[in-house]
Amino acid sequence: MSASFSPATPTPRTGIPPWTMAIAAMLLIQVSNALSVGVIEQAGAAGTAWLRMCFGAVFLWIIVRPSLRSIKLRDLPALLALGAVTGFMTTFFLAAVERIPLGTAVAIEFLGPLAVAGIASRRRSGLVWPGLALVGVVLMTEPWHGRVELLGVGFALLAGVCWGLYNVLTQVIGDRFSGIIGLSITIPIAAVFTTAFGLPQVIEGAPDWRVVGLAALIALITPVISFGLEMLALRRMTHTALGTLLSIEPAFGVLIGLIVLSQTPTPMQFAGVVLVVLAGAAAQRDGRRPDPLTS
Image 1: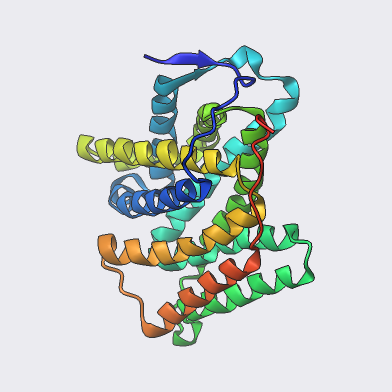
Image 2: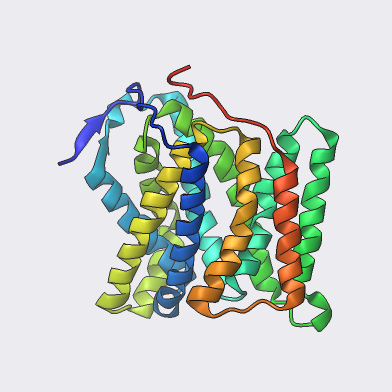
């Protein structure tokens, strides 16, 4: 049974530490990305992203019906921007995963939120860490072998830009809407923004019902559960604290890529991901953010 909620309704604070929700979200996102590889073969990267957004929108509206009348005019720019960023972040990243290993794609994409954490830092040294992460990314792509998939790297970089913007906008929307109400509004917007790119690929690929069913399952994992956990975590954390936690995600990408996709990194690539993780962990170390609805 779904219910209608108002943005003014505060979300009760639970005893679950926000960092555990963030880590669970990261793991789930990488699992869903690895599972998406099988869907991409029939529906294409943009088609897979679009299916995930569409099914995600359906699931979210079953779980929670947002009160659209309560959306104020001043909320629209941030909602539209977050919807667009979410849709294209997923589209660009899946286009990257179609061409380069999952762990490498995550490491490159991670440059986006790491740059946001560095810029948000009050210390000048904060901008050193994205540079160190870039060195790690170079080690992971191994350009000296002359086999760099430039298009895949480009898509991962675009996904990183979207990821950095996503973190900033998610906190803005999380401050305005309680629980996952903001998510239930922005995911349908993401589906609309990516329709022109995703729908033609789905029609052309004509995926069978098993692939469509897998896309629905992936959508339940991401965006519904994982993005919901991220939004709840962001309401109680600073950008810098989240940036530190996100340092683990490239390692998760390598781990899931190894387990699910049998993508084994070389020693040099492993050293690269270690550098990326260290750069992210060193980028920012402070704090916890008070819940705006309870402080």
